[in-house]
Length: 254
Ligand SMILES: NC(=O)c1ccc[n+]([C@@H]2O[C@H](COP(=O)([O-])OP(=O)(O)OC[C@H]3O[C@@H](n4cnc5c(N)ncnc54)[C@H](OP(=O)(O)O)[C@@H]3O)[C@@H](O)[C@H]2O)c1
Image 1 (cartoon, rainbow, N blue to C red):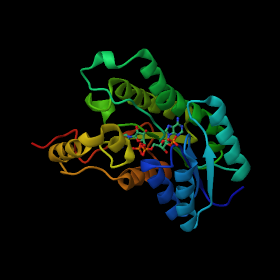
Image 2 (cartoon, rainbow, N blue to C red; image 1 turned 60 degrees about the vertical axis):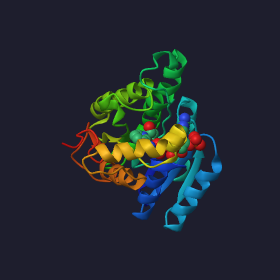
Image 3 (cartoon, rainbow, N blue to C red; image 1 turned 90 degrees about the horizontal axis):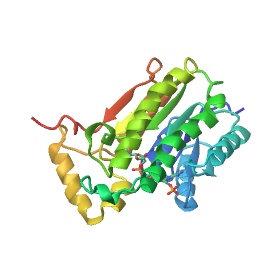
Image 4 (cartoon, protein in one colour; image 1 turned 45 degrees about the vertical axis):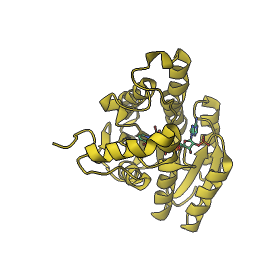
């Protein structure tokens, strides 16, 4: 078994997941980098982690597939022999304006929930036996401010993130006392996610967000990675918590 602690981060070839992998690597942990489509960015993140002194394993797995989740867990067991933290970060959405109820089909809900909800559950279930063996183990689910505000890329996405919050409470009870389970709910984070999803509307959306937020700012992937570190590797007495990190957007300025 590896002497160093190991963090498994789903969807870590880009954005928040990539920043989280780099942060854990910079603090003396080994990391597992996961993606479902394009291997090149995942290999680049792993190379950056190795340059920071970490061992990094790259595993292709679609978290919507239970077989893939179990294969990912088996690869972690074979390579490192341990897992200390799981960050359930991989997610998906469809950008549909709020009032366009006809823009969302049942298949859209199912596709989004298959990744965001079922995938988060399956990945946690697959890794739980390994996590249980490590003192202070933690799971961090990446939710969204969309789960609390009725704003976001689509109603299906908001619903899926609300389900992640509820699942965080249930998993915290189910996996205690050995494993802590918490969630971070980010506001606008500067990653390819919104830039790709909103296209030319992104600049206006970002400016409007920063205008409304109490801290007059948006979040960086590193801001959310720092919370994934806090909830995963520290926060010894915190479980079943959903921590909002949104630069004060939900408050809005007075
Ligand atoms: N950006 C924001 O403003 C924001 C705000 C609140 C919450 N979030 C949440 O933060 C998380 C990460 O978002 P991000 O902004 O960092 O997005 P991103 O830059 O687009 O990265 C998404 C990552 O997830 C991977 N992925 C997608 N579907 C997957 C699947 N089925 N199985 C495994 N990996 C998969 C992608 O790689 P492949 O494409 O190769 O699979 C990529 O590595 C998501 O859960 C999102 O809902 C983001």
